Length: 375
Image 1 (cartoon, rainbow, N blue to C red):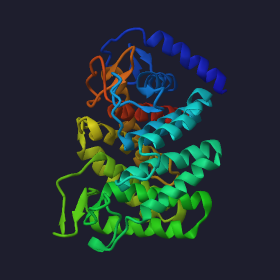
Image 2 (tube, rainbow, N blue to C red; image 1 turned 180 degrees about the vertical axis):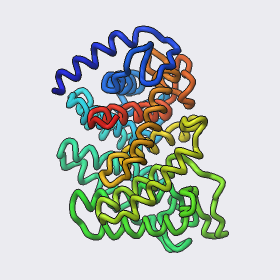
Image 3 (tube, one colour; image 1 turned 90 degrees about the vertical axis):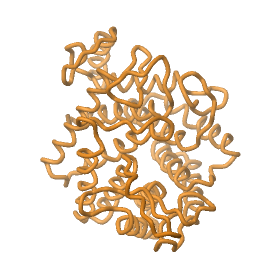
């Protein structure tokens, strides 16, 4: 079945990607149906071909070969490699896992420890996925070690929560608590340590009571425990995404619909308010280039939940599909297969790692849903 689908996908792709047209037909490219499997092949291959630093064994900052090293995007690049490997079973992706593990550690000072707690959380999440994909104990050991580094960031300022950065214990951020909750929940599900379930519940309870608006689904960026001020003007797609991811993971563990309801509230706010004509808005380049991709990853987890209301599921799939079709037909530079910060507009001759990753995550998400016959 997979072989037949792949051959059909490739045949569609070979016909469909020759031109760089401005086709706007919904679900089509130049009048032909989009094969998300083939599109994911091309986008994830472009990530490797245009960003992978073969000698340094990490991903460059941009497609022009800028070698600046930023720790947290490396985690999401590994995530895309794992997406592609799980989808295809192709060892060309798996062969990079070990190289990434070596190169990123070296570039980070020969350790996965970092002053930014959210950066460590992202890398631990990706490394845990690498363990599940390979069963290689070194990934398990690294994920558990990073988790030990992360737990030190919890303190009682602002009533709890994990701080954003070492030395800034007063700043409690959604970006350092949402991923930590997801990590704790997944570690519990993978290895059965009850203390990690308690960590997940504790972190979630703090974030929900402190940074989540239960009236409309907004996730606020941070609270300053010295002033008590909550930054309510900063609402980003990636914080919405990790809150959704946290709620979904706890729904899996606890079986309580309330967690799913929280996720739906956050998803509904994002898809109605953090958009420009139903397309996830641009949040800039640099760190902001990754925000939409993070949302997409955990939004896709929500879509796959069996207890999600059928009407909501249909609406979410349509939203994601509209974003992906717009990106693929209007926002992708071909044949390079580069994505930019605005999913309606093609980037130029080059693009940055973070915005490329967001596009890759969207296309891989569509291939996953296509494979599960959810489109």
